[in-house]
Length: 341
Ligand code: UFG
Image (cartoon, rainbow, N blue to C red; front, side, top):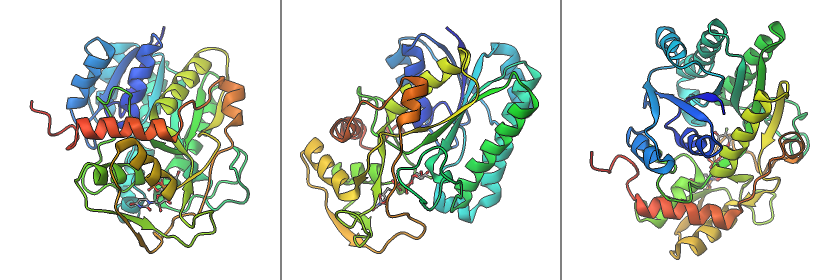
């Protein structure tokens, strides 16, 4: 059992990983500043894990706050989720993205260095690969992100590789996520975007629950089997369990490693819509719209390296993903904020 610091702990992937780490017997200290999450998540985590969460409200760019947290808690490893993640917003606010995603990362690494903590799990993204030279993407695929968000993830990888090169005790797990979707099977935590969802699954969920009239499908003329975009959708609990496997590997004798966290197969937008209709029993109204600028037609992971190195693979398919998403959305139609204090 180890003590794991989670930054961005009350966000979508952070909260699910918190549950998975506790289930695996680890101690968790969560840090967040609620810039894109709700305090109500902590109540849900208390109920799901059966114990009061250990939590610090702090900004990862605040070196003084980080220092106090490391002194107070004696941390064995850090899983770093705290970052901005909206591709469109990243083009409009590049400096905020570089400050939080790169500057915040450096601040966390410096705090770790000062307190003798050398195990780091980094939330990278399949977006670092860019235009496919071949598919599926392997970890050896060339790196060429197509937007500011992706640049911040590639820079984050570089910061960590340089830190690891300077200190043989530093070990980093680079986890390149494909498209995380779904929710904890309890329906108590899930994805709760502020404003209009940028991503497909939360948008579909809000159409199913009646918050939005219809989905716009961005493009039906791609060279894919049904003309709509293809992605590798991974259940967020599979992703969370991938983090547990990564933490255990780092704390064992694994050195630094880089793995894709995906399922190894692609699904189209229309596949997702149909699966969601089956799961919810409701029709999902949609219309075809022009392609979204910057979208790639299709990509998915070669997921074999994670299986080989971590003995981990995604277990939950698209029907489970949609059933769990729908349980979360129907139990919490307005998300966390609607919960009475
Ligand atoms: N889509 C629609 N309508 C919508 C939203 C999305 O048709 O309202 C389509 C997109 O065109 C795409 C697919 O659904 O074909 C998936 O789109 P998402 O926005 O859900 O996900 P992306 O693949 O665009 O982006 C995700 C993450 C990014 C990450 C990127 C690359 O949101 O953070 O994967 O890994 F950078």
